[in-house]
Image (tube, rainbow, N blue to C red):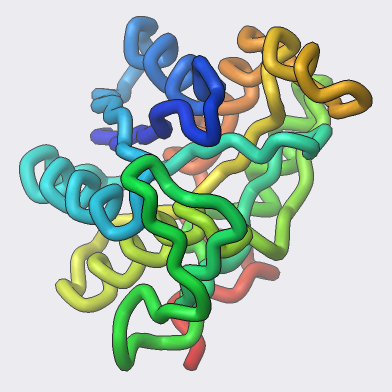
Length: 214
């Protein structure tokens, strides 16, 4: 099975981004029965989608899992939905700060993740790692890429499942944010590998909506 796994470059003055640190390391390890392609996306509205789509066209994956940093969260968050809006409280890495702008003009209001999100949460928790279903991917570049990938797949009618996972700060980042929780890189890697294996094994949760909503 072919899996495309993406992370993000550092942003907002950070020296690293745990999403790319974890994704890159997973790419250096083997998961039996899977071909994993890893990609570091620019933390830039629109351009992240363009880079991901080019990789999807080249690699032709069966599953796409995008990963991003959610500083302040204490659990691995499996995102349920992406909404059609860019609304940034800070600038991206090219100085863009859109407010109330649609990601896809005339596109659906939202897309559901097509990953088995509840099964992934259960599997990660069984590994002793805090995890939750998250009902908001925010309105920054993480939501932008989740919506953009799902919109591309829907518009092109490509049979590929996709979704987004948020991860906490690493301990070395949390030092600079007193009181904020963190998670070790090895724990994050185990959680993401568990998510990949579960997504490859289980096509869809019966209790989770799929497709898109207007």
